[in-house]
Image (cartoon, rainbow, N blue to C red; front, side, top):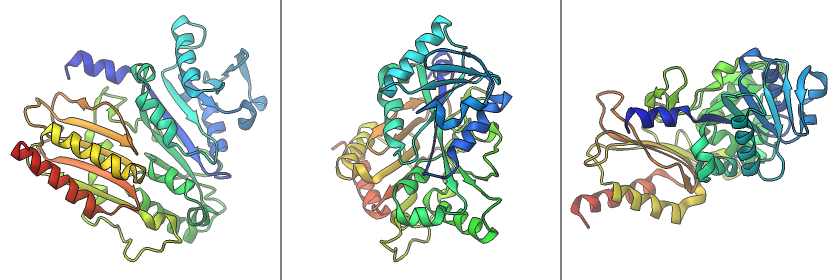
Length: 352
């Protein structure tokens, strides 16, 4: 990828998806973010203005579905289809009808599966030309999170696909509750940083810049984005003899490594086969690949059966030239995934 193309990709507007189970404090977090001057160049797309209590905030200007906060943050309601809302918002930005926002945050409902929103951002060609996925932010209830993870799969999936995890209500929960919840979240999503917050207060700086491109340097930061060291060597992360009554005991996280350069066709065939057989079980996939005859590394990123177009980087971030693919799966162990991976890669070496 040449410098001009790299700059173009990095300059697409970064999008963060804020999610969290019912009562986890997601709306309180959003309310504090909207008051923060550091959010001045941010547009927030929410389901209903009333949910965030905008009536109690100062508003500089408003239209039928857009308000500008005193912090400079722009708020927009989802009118029907999310794709239409984001396309319309971008057009209004270009025409100067709304402030020239530099970042977008999408707030989901408490019961929402974040995957369809991530799929929309990754697969719609018009949106992907204007926006890039920065990452997912998930709030987890410090008092009731353990019980919710036991009873419902939605909060487990919200935690599994997140790039940032916020444990809320830490002033009300005990130290033991917080410690147990931290440990639980580490088994679901070992690479996501966890931040404990009180009354929804969090520094915006810790939430954003979770994507491949470092917002400060406008260049790729693979190590920070991939964090393959967090997955360790043990595929099950302590899930031996898992209890089917605990949703997160059905989650696996692991890293596949290939020492020799890969055939792109073999890798693509493996992914197609894996998706066709286990698509619903593939919660999150990230990887950096050493592809035969490619000038630089190729970066891949997927949520379930939807993948971002692969990105080719100008150079490797360090001396490590191995292909590394980190995966979070549900009801899918490492062994069959790795066996299929090795079989397709070996077939690619043989040219079959």
